[in-house]
Image (tube, rainbow, N blue to C red; front, top):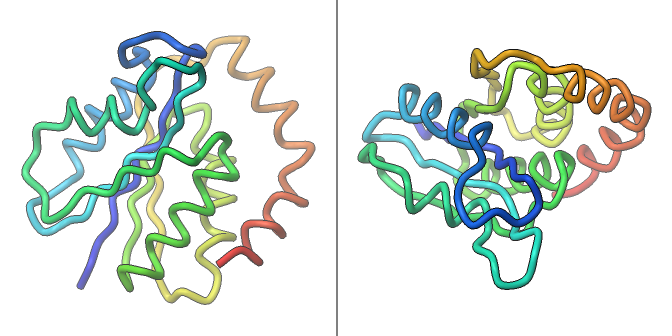
Length: 158
């Protein structure tokens, strides 16, 4: 049995260190991961000359795991979802543990679930307990407008 723990990145567009939101996701993922798991760090570098969120997370990771995957190409939640789906298929993973923020979990889970269609893998969404801000609530509300179309894209991308 292969379990993939996928940690979604978050940044403030170019800070040289992990954003506190991303650090909280990473800490929560370390609580979930075991030595037999594969961990996927997903997130890009928003500015030239800065390190990708995925690299910053991988560098900060302390829990022993079977393998680590660094996905620097995911620029959006859709990109994260597609990357998780591809990694799941490549690894033939049976279970995906998706780690993100409380305010982001529903949308991210919906898109990752679409990307997993036909893979046979189950999905469990694990959320941090950070408070939801009005900014995050507004961002999620606006983002949900595109979710039905994005889910179709995620489901068709292998």
